[in-house]
Image (cartoon, rainbow, N blue to C red; front, side, top):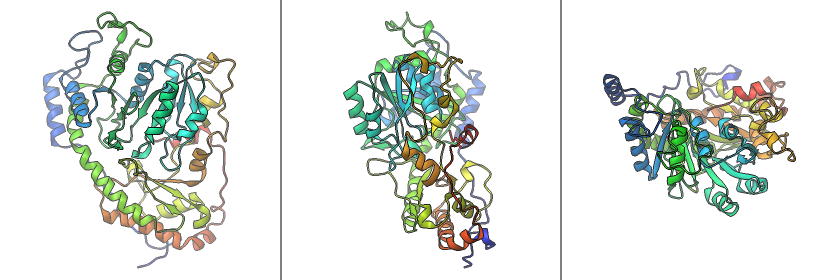
Length: 457
C-alpha cells in the first residue's frame, strides 16, 4: 500500500463518493398520495373547535411520537426554530427576562429569546458533553434569570441532573433543544421533557425529516395548552379554553401540514434503526481513532445514548504537528470532493461562538433602539471575546466534526476514515515541510460572515 499522502501526490484512500442517504420510501409516497387525493393538505383552523389541533395526520403523528417515547404531549410545529419560539413563549418569558443559552449551537437556540423580549446570556460548555456546563450556568444566574435553553449537541445529551437541580433551586424553567438528539435517553429518560418543555427538528438533514418541521414535547398540561395556543392564533381561543393568564398567548401560524405529518408518521418508524446503525459505526470509529496521537475521539455515552448527528473529535495540533486547518486539508485530499454537508468527511470547528454575531456585539435585535437589551438599563451585558473560554477553544483550535458517520455507510467506510487520519498523522512532518505557511495558526475574532457560513442548523 502506498502510504504517501494525497496532498503530496500520493493515491487517495478513497476515490468513490460516499453514498447519499435515501430517507423516503414507498410508504411515504403512498401516504402523501392519500392526502393529496383527499384535497385536505392542512386541516387547521385558527380558532377553537374540532380543527384547533389540526387534522387527522397531524394528530396521528403527534400521538405516535408521544406514545413511542413516553411523552404526555407531542405538539408538531412547522420548524424547530419556531418550536423554540413557541417554547419560550409558553414558559412565560417577558421583556427584560434573562435566558441562559449555549454559545456553541445553531443561532436560533439563543435568538428565540428575543421574540418575547428575553435577553440571551451565554454560559460556557462542558468540553466532554459539548452542552452547557452546570458550573457555568450557576455563575450566570441573576435575579432576572427565568429560563435555560439546554442544547443536546451533536446527538449526545447534556448532564441534565445537575442542570435540573440548579433550575429548581432558582425556580428557573428549562427548555431542551434536542434538535439533533431524537430518540436519545439520559439515564433511561427520553431527552426533551426532562426539563419543562423541549423538542426536536424535522429539518431535511436530520435523522428523520419532513422537509421542514419540528416536534415540541412536554409532560406539563398547562405548558402544552399554551404551546398549542401560540402555535395556532391563540388570541382567538382565549375564552373558549378558559385561559386566565393571557400573557404570551397571541399566536401565529406555526402549524405542520397534513402532507408533512403523513411523511413523518412513516419516518418515525425508521428512527430506531438509523440510531442503531450510527451507534455501531461511531463506536467502531471511536475505538480506532483513539489509537492515534493528537486525536481524542472518546464519546459522551456514560449517562445515556447518542444519536451521532455529528461525530465529534478533539484535535491537538501541537501533538500532531499540523495546524488544524492544514490537517483538515490533508484529510480532505484523501477523499473525493464532497457535494454537501452529508458527504463532507471533516469540518473544522462547528459554529463561531454566537456572541461574536453582530446582534450581540452591537446589542441591537428588535428595532434599532437596543431592545430588548435596553429593558434593563442598569445592566451591562458582556459579549466580549473570552467570556466562554472552552467554547472559544473548540472554535479556534480543537474541534473537528465528522458528519459521515451515518446510514447507509459501513464499517469499511469508517476504516477508510481512520486510514486517512492515520496516513496524514504519520506523514505530518513531510506535510508541514511542504506547506510551512499554511501550518501557521493564528486565533482571530471571527467576523459575522464567517460565523454565518459555518452555521449548521
